[in-house]
Amino acid sequence: MKLYTIVRDFQQEIVIEKSRFICTLKKVATEEEAQDFIKETKKKYWDATHNCSAYIVGESGAAQRSNDDGEPSGTAGLPMLEVLRKNNLHNVAAVVTRYFGGVKLGAGGLVRAYTNSVAAAIEEAGIAEKVLFGYFYFIQDINSAGKVLNILYQQNLFTVSSVEYDIDAKIVLRMPMSLKTEADGWLTEALNTEVELIKEKEEYVEQPLTSNK
Image (cartoon, rainbow, N blue to C red; front, top):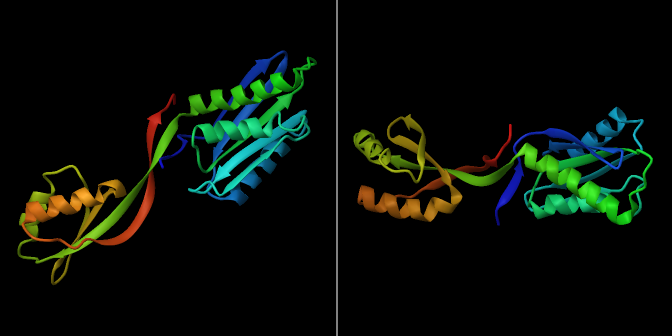
């Protein structure tokens, strides 16, 4: 399953029936960070009528929370959370601050207002795919390392992350995890021998898909 996040933290205001809706989006790494962000935003907009919130934290989306902050149940926090889910966003928190303008919107109007507020902010913030990359190394005889590296530089499945020279050469390759099997096959054919790739680490890398920055 592909994972996405926002390209950047972002804030945007829209006005609906004289009420101001200020959506603040933030990238967060932990649930604690998300909760701290919500507290800080509520403190900043202490005089607002409502500060509704939603967040999804964790690559598996294990932590998902929403809060209506005084709006009728299910009309604010949950619609906001659904927008995050629809965009498959992870490690993102959203707070929509409302300053009531005197015109009641009704349950349906509130759902649309909070939904549109978050959706519009996400569109402006931009979306990035979170691609899982791995770092793999293999040991090469130091006398043939230069020749092997010249071969490795002639493909686009992976990049040579680093080379460490000692008695032998330790060659570290960086690639999307989804290309690991293909890279194994390419190495075996290109070097005319079976190469044992040993994983050092893996990390998520954000690759922007859309951005209006």
